Length: 283
Image (cartoon, rainbow, N blue to C red; front, side):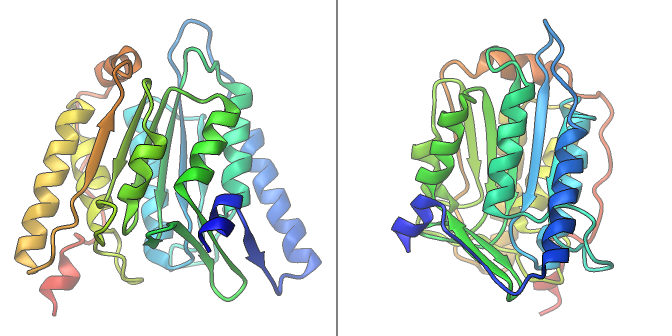
């Protein structure tokens, strides 16, 4: 399975030609809407992905896209790949390994890779081999750390902020670490993260980092510290084994990170949805 994940293998089945055509058109529309870069401006390009069809990941990916686009001025430069939000069938391209590859390639095509920044947020279940793709009984696969790192390196995207919400997501830190990159994960390489029940609105990581800390006018490093403290408090409250969120900031990432941090809107937005801890409180 690890070898398959490294090679990017995906199993798709039971989809009619009409379903495949509709998916192709959704993806085409999403990629076509991405605005080109502006010369002399460090533009941020947001790609938010729910890799699992459970509604919690669809809800989290959608709201993460909104928060990150507002924070980093990426309106018009944002791609969302996700399944249902639990209320209606999804009108978005699905969050699959193939669609992620296409979205990243589109960003690389329109951005100035010497100047602009990729903001990638993924949310899904995870395993020690990587992040898991699951679309009901019609799609299954995985993206390993080596596979994702290879995508980014092949496309020449060095300036990047990658946030991964999944169990065992710390396995991505070393392969994705780079001089100009930032990697933040929901857990260490040998720990699970929490809040991924299908009827949740947020995972612990998504609620703490996206729904709380990154809504505020504070630098990314401070937001990460706030999110980590929130998660730790929730885990104590739920009597859970600490997940051990990770962060790695490259030595040259400050060149673009400081610029983006200074452009964050000064007024915070309010958290939305049910807090991730609410399902534990209901036990």
